[in-house]
Length: 173
Image (cartoon, rainbow, N blue to C red; front, side, top):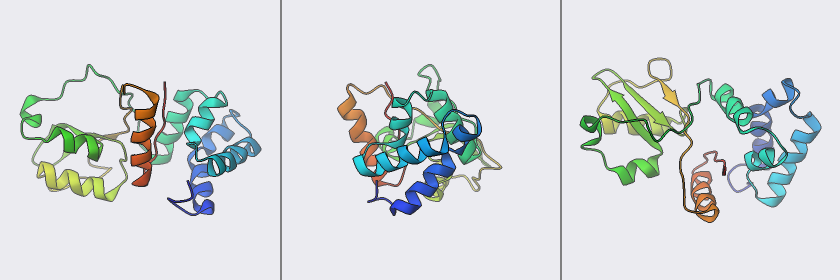
């Protein structure tokens, strides 16, 4: 984990991101700090450690929603994206960019994005969809859960790629 950020920056960000768990008595501050230390020492994902300690997946997702100031929407394969929007999209590029358009008008785009607060993602959306303005206040962004992948090794490999780009990732069964 320390290859992405300094240990101190990582610990501070992680503690801020999951402070909701302490407020709701789901975990003690001491236990959260122990998870941070274990994550730094083992290279395991902190979210994975929270889940292993019995923290419910929805609690982790609510923490992320609160941290980013956006609602989370669980991945749903039944969501249909308009063929008119997708006709000219490069699906392989969208998979690697970790966002997908749900609706597009001349003024704004509504998308599902893994990192809704990442400025480079917003710029990519503006450029790709040819929209003038995309911001958190004027558009709707959602965090996503992707998958299924064929095995845990593939899921961890994908998370490693995301983390190399300073993105958060949880491997969930």
